Image 1: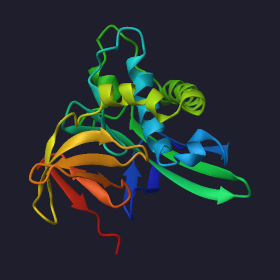
Image 2: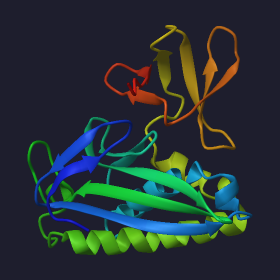
Image 3: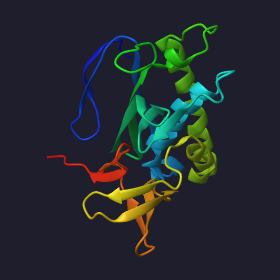
Image 4: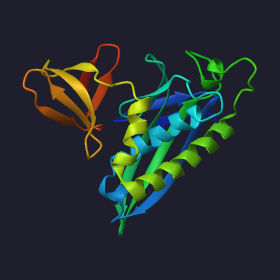
Length: 223
């Protein structure tokens, strides 16, 4: 856990600078090779981003707080303001998978856009970063247990409830092909359907980026 971040790691080679007021923390989790999560490891980031959003929206009185998931790992307020995100690294060691997850969420810094405390009712005490982190970690445990017991389909309804992309129409930036978002496939990849051919296409989160402003799916350059 840190209060100020000067060299945070994002997807590909993105680097993040975060001032005071952001809940920034890293946690590790290990699963056995034969477990559901190990077999579908790409779902771990989806599970964690659900935990962040559900932690906020499970607070009494905030069930309708407009905090959403932007594929694959961003947290938005409404459709335009990013207030958080995460990155997950996975390594295999002996007979297990080790997940290392870094989370950043703007709790109490109003600049340059807004933070969680900005959208709370006036009669509610502002949250501390420590309170939010505790809520998130509790939810992570809850959803890990659910996934391990019942599989990936057990978390999809909540993921779709919170995400921004239901039947969203997009353009693949490299081919200009028009597609419609269908959901996540069994491996946790974004599944879209081509308007021209009707073919289903699965897109890995590691190699693609979704541009909400222009409704574009871009291939990320990691050079």
